[in-house]
Length: 202
Image 1 (cartoon, rainbow, N blue to C red):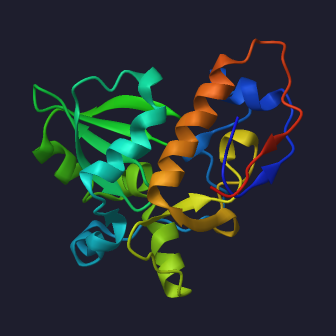
Image 2: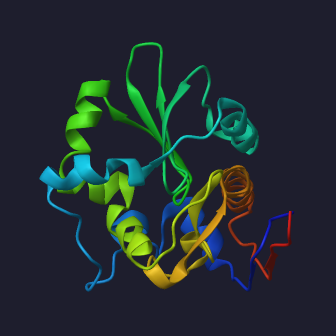
Image 3: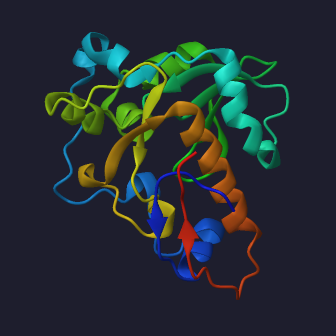
């Protein structure tokens, strides 16, 4: 499997993480000292930092490796600064493609509900990873056009959900690679082990 920019030794645990979440809490596995989200009243001031605005053609290129997850006729609605994608379906329900966990789930019954939830601390915690973004900006790690935040080593391979594991990456590459990785892990037979995942420059 071809993946860009990271080399990571892994074991069969990675396949189990991908299939059934064993040992991996994903977005709910924050360290005890992880920063909390800002008060909801501050979301408006910072909301532009929490999203990026890639071209539709770039989203389509990034999604080309996610064909296995049944996106169907859902249309991209918004893209977070971590490259996760909100979709709108034909009934105006909102779906969330979570790159870190490799899931596409029904998230909100309407855009209004989405907007309300994303103004709450819980919504920011669950969907936007806002505290990491704000810390990145405090430390001068601003996104350039066409970039999103990414994990140096994907948490699904056992790496920490922590600021030290964050970098910047081309958005198309990040979305495309995460689709490859999750499909690869999910397709592994139960008893197979991953000896090595090699990520080279795209």
